Image (cartoon, rainbow, N blue to C red):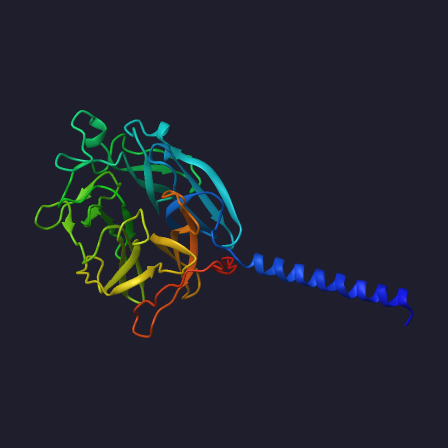
Length: 345
């Protein structure tokens, strides 16, 4: 072999190796789907409407900058489209501070978006300011639209819940439609969780048998972020524990044969530990892939390194079950979940 041909051959081999390595690296990078989309977001609620996956998160920034909601849609869980400012404070006249933790449900062709606003306080709390009426006006609001992407408008012109019941701060709501058509309303901060029943037009609540609007169902360890789903006739009630501002944040769950409980803590299903790829995983929701028994946990976490409390990102990882129906601990990953278009017939 002459020298020039040998140099040419080696060059081709090196070039081919470089291309293969680059392609391999690119392929590996393409398989990493967490976080789902760019930007700082938290408290994600996942949903499926028709043939589309949706995520409705909090815009995660300094409190006084959390003035709008964006939404994200996907046909396959991998490629996400951003829908900007589906709701902002200019549409809610009584909303004077931040809004966060959206929750959505479809009813009679309309989409109802529930949210917490103004971080309502009351006398006796450290952050209460008697000279600032923002501290004691606000609560949980609701907006409505004819499409998941909005635009949304204020539904009631006032909060749906603005008072304190059972010492639960009116934040972090979740609406669950039971098999009999009842819309149960879970909510509550300050380590108290309440349960109510929405009336037919979502303007208020149907009293319980004892005349109360809300019954407390707080399980051990509950802090905030309630969520419910149903699988194989079992009601799974889930919530966040720890402090949302640090690495102690995590998700726990319980199981019951009816939506109203009672609920006893079974264990932790999502948490971050030393050496993990992120910290502070929590405030989640769950998506079932249509037509399957596959479930996904949608949650927020803080990437490492990260020195900003509000720098949170939205991620998805698979959630699996044991033979007895209990939930296996969710492993947080960079990979996330794989492409899964919804089949239509």
